[in-house]
Amino acid sequence: MHQEIDTLIITPANMGHIDQDAAASGLSSYGLMERAGHAVAATALRRFPDALRFAVLCGPGNNGGDGYVAARALQEAGACVAVYALGDPGALKGDAATAFAGFHGPVAPLSSYAPQPGDVVIDALFGAGLARDVPDEVAKTIEAVRRAVLPVLAVDLPSGVDGRTGQVRGVAFEAAATVTFMCRKPGHLLLPGKTLAGALEVFDIGIPGRILARHADHMRVNTPAIWRLALPPQTGATHKYVRGHLAVFSGPATATGAARLSAMAGLRAGAGLVTLLSPRDALPANAAHLTAVMLKAIDNEADLAALLDDERLKTFVLGPGFGDAGKTRAYVKLLAERDRHLVLDADGISAFRDDPAVLFSLFAGGRPRLVLTPHDGEFARLFPDLAADKTLSKIERAQKAASRSNGAVILKGADTVIAAPDGRVLVNENAPPWLATAGSGDVLAGMVGAHLTQGMPAFEAAASAVWRHGEAGRIAGEGLTAEDLPGAIQPWPVA
Image (cartoon, rainbow, N blue to C red; front, side, top):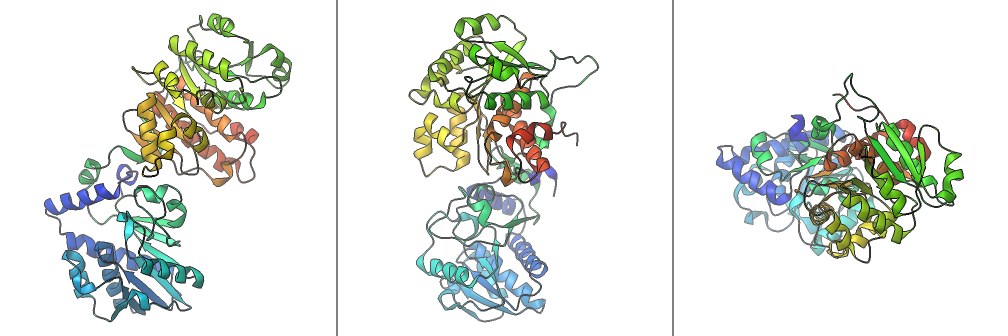
């Protein structure tokens, strides 16, 4: 599949519009179902060659239609197949009815399915369009399959997973693998759906890329192809100030390590110079650990105001280990008034929990100069209403937060989402689980700052930093600590 199409993320609602457009363009909708069902059957035979029986569970819609096509193809390949239907298959309409008519074999009620040793379950009950809790009959089947510890191959998405949010609707299959068509849906990338889907295979069943792109809503998987054109130029005229001067605020003498992690990451990620802005009482602690990173004493607003007279100092990271909420708010106000770029992380975010609107007003209007890097708890401090709204997906929460703050938002986690004020959104997928370690976020903040100070726009700086951070985690390997990450940051991807 073409790389640009392969990065698209399509909501279930928009996938419905795509199917309608594909049919209107002259494509056979049943032909698409045939290709989908055959892709499921081929995957089942390839992944589970030792299956004694394929138990195909078919739902009351088009996902069930895919199941009937897959069951027929498996029969024709000589596999043992048993089909079970939710509801009356005689009541199916359209392409699903055609698929059912094409399957020549017994179809038993779903409630009669009794898991047997050697079964492989093909889950074609609901797919990505589910937006309500699964009915009791399906819940009982899911529990029976779970107790029997049978492998499940899901069609489109494991039944019980909401394709828009990735959340579980009551109970859900945990699939060994999932077959989906054309593009990933949010539920494939957002937790817990990401985990429940297992190994994901995306099949091209023939819908033109132009139709997909028309309904993508600026949602993509985070890859270098998205932000490569925004990379900082490297020429023979490049010098350290062209590469940008990044400043990172240090906490007090007892909490300096987080800021140093950010500073070193900023230097490794490409900033030409990095200065650690330290309270005077923390100068000895910081000086003992710094070599390439410079050190500057900053105790109050007057010190910072004087520093800002140097226009070459473009970008700041504030929050890691900082601690002082009052000083944070004063410094942020001054930085905003002086038109600087700011990465606000950790304690910097929490400092505005009592009145987030103050922060947003400082960066309202104009090009985005603010990057927020919250985990879920910090997000709830700035956006309590969005965090509490369980109808929103993580993608939707990040989009609304970016719009409200006029900043790029990195909503962190194993399914990190990066959003821009204009509605663009990326979901990251290259981060290994062992990145979940103390100090990892401090490293990420410094990397974002480095990209900003090299001239990248806020959204692209954030997205590229998240991706490079994931690659650094992969290269550093399982068991890494945050101190390992700066040294594992790789050069910019070139292809």
